[in-house]
Amino acid sequence: MNVACTGRSRALGARIAEHLGAGLVETNLSRFPDGEIYLRTGPLDDTTVVVGSLLSGDSLVELLLLIDACHRSEVLLVIPYLGYARQDREFRPGEPVSARAMARALSSGVSRVVTVNVHKETVLSNFTVPASQVSLAPEAGDFIRGLGLGNPLILAPDRGAVPFATAVASRGGWEVDHLEKTRISGKEVRVEPRKGGPWTGDVVLVDDIISTGGTLAAAAGMLRAQGARGVHAVCVHGLFTGTALDLLGSSGIGQIAASDTIEGPNSRYSAAGPIAQALSR
Ligand code: R5P
Image (tube, rainbow, N blue to C red; front, side, top):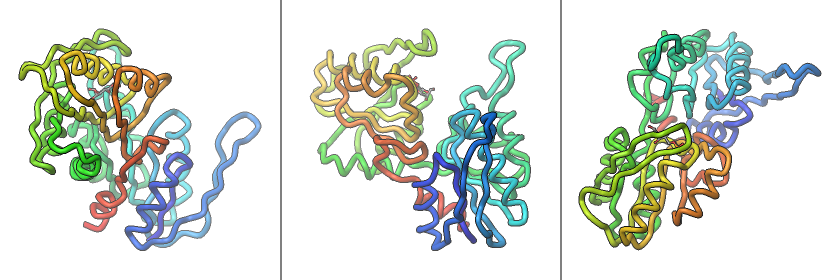
């Protein structure tokens, strides 16, 4: 078995290979003059773990090309961040179910799929091959313990994040609560004050995704106004689009941490161990 990864998932791919005791496939990437992506892999074993997050159109094309380049090998596909998963149904007539479109395209040529904290589990049924997810709640919990905050409140910014927050909190025996969020637009959200009343200790906001940072910035502003000592943010998938990091910093959030499903300067803990375990099952 060996591991081949896309350009945006190189560090995580190398960590997964290390956990599996597998070799890394050398992959060269370049572009044709018209912008099309060209790639070429080195020699492959009988089974190849292909690792690539779905972040943009280019990352989808790169992943499809890499899967095809590995067609002489059995391909186990790891999609650390499954983009387009938030459009998981037709909210208004005429819309695509984007999650389904991506899942169908990425099922071709692979024998199974492993992903990480997918936005909604129902998305997995759109793959036409066996698909499963791993949760990084234990790793997020261990990361929070390492911050040495003592007894933080683990707070989900909305109801959708409660199962993840509960699993994170159970790692340290911490209290858990959630806020009520209303999304006004793609960038703007309103967060109701915490029903449990002010919390004057440390708060760790946890969510599956940080994109614009709007959700957590609104929550942090409210918590600081209510007297929280420190507010920190831990997510699985750190997209940090546009000025998200500036927004989070200026809203008074101290630590801003994400896993390495999307590699960046705020990747502070790794998905490699749970992914390798899932592949070994
Ligand atoms: C939404 O349901 C997700 O769980 C996140 O809360 C959301 O994607 C965060 O987006 P943003 O950082 O743009 O507020």
